Image 1: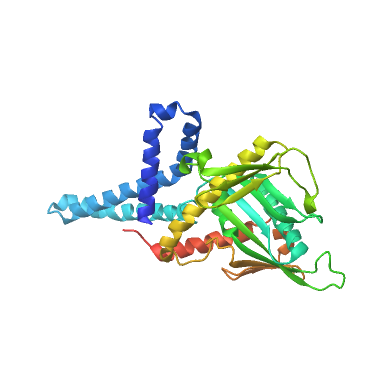
Image 2: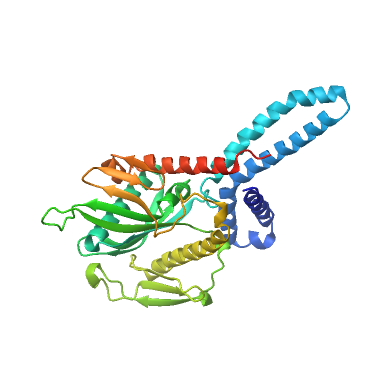
Length: 357
């Protein structure tokens, strides 16, 4: 953790130097991106600087205690408990700020919801998850835009991609990544039998433009006509955009907007986010043994939660949380679940790192 904090403080100080560089000052988009990145790092960097200052003071105070000067030793011994208490408080603040990993303080993310096994019922469940997250974003004051969607004839979603912006959005929503299972009587079921269906959710931190160097020659851009539910024709103009990244073979497409330029901008946003997630996943695989908790792992194959309609029950399997408030959770009152996950992750982190001397 100390290495990660040093890395982020170093990046914060590097940005401060870049923000007075004439080349950066003359480049509006890069200047804006760096300013946003600085804002996301400011609180953590300031707190870590405070922690390091207190650490240095404690070292100096211990040196005074070890010195032969009786008066200085007495003063130092009187001051030391207060310095240690301050350091402990700042350390606790740092633990809270770093819960959820190094991207925890980013203020924008991309959420992908996909129907899994279960046919049309899975697509309808994906729609319900979309509505739940949309209501939750509204309650938090976050902005949520549809970047792309693939609807079915019955109003479900094979896939829907959201761009979310707002303070703390990634910190909370990252724990939603994984497999979501629903148990209920489908709308299409005539005999009243309960069916189990699946949907997957992926929440990815959105990088700043300066973090992902993506050039036009790095990907292929294809244009095609947008289509509606069940393949219904929507328009005759090639407004839909598909991007294929050559190196990773990552493919994204957007067709929600009537404007080709808007679809292209949204597709680029999703592609950059997936590239950042790809890069982040490789780095996490290298140091995976350093983090034992599965909370927030983001593995889509991991079944994280069950929504049982007959019992009005929602169960999060990672932390053994069971609530008989499914109706409230689906209406957007998700905070009771997200806060429990954050608290669990915080306690795991405290147990792992403890006090830092």
